[in-house]
Image (cartoon, rainbow, N blue to C red; front, side):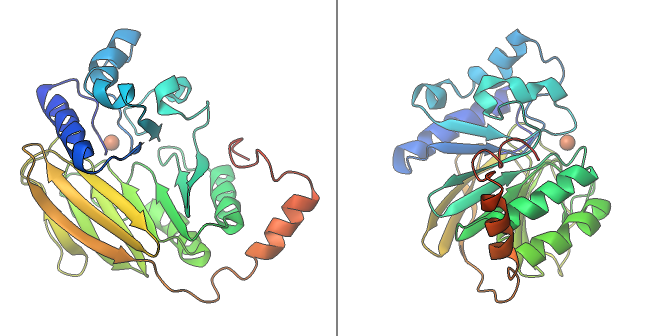
Length: 274
Ligand SMILES: [Fe+2]
């Protein structure tokens, strides 16, 4: 989910739909795509704009893994329920999936080098990147972050990224695969820009801009099933994305891994941001 932290009633409605969805699909991980909180960010705001709307999920042990957006305070990397452990960008694995949470508000050279190396090191079948600003978006308000695309897309292609989730535009858009990569914009889990989509036939596979929404995602083997659910509980998009077959994109990854192991940095390298 993205762009959720308003503290307003639609955010709470989405929270309730997430709880309802969990009764039929017992997810235990939520990835947060930034703009996790708007306006004040004091301890009482964390209660009103995060802990209360998702209280049943937190109580059930669901783990949230955030990245930050342009409205989030940098120090929020230390908020315990975001599970960022003080890092602006980091990686973690679940089963055969490795996630890479990036900070697209400050995409400096050091971060670019880190994500290139971390993607190259990944052993999991799936590589999923998520961050706030979309490389592809056809909403009128922001649209594609072209500068960021120039920087990241060649790395994603080279390193075999499968799926990218972003927010920032307050709509839902499923983008047709771009250079073989699946892109989703899902930035309306609290905010909404109703009617803001300008679907582009070359890029837009599906969209929903009439109400708040969030996504359910399940990966089973080589298949990723997704379902986008509105504030009122309607399924507004669904489908399956098959893991891309690639050859040649990862030829130096094994060399990199060997080099890192020989330096004794295999443990902990992924969370220290280097
Ligand atoms: Fe944003």
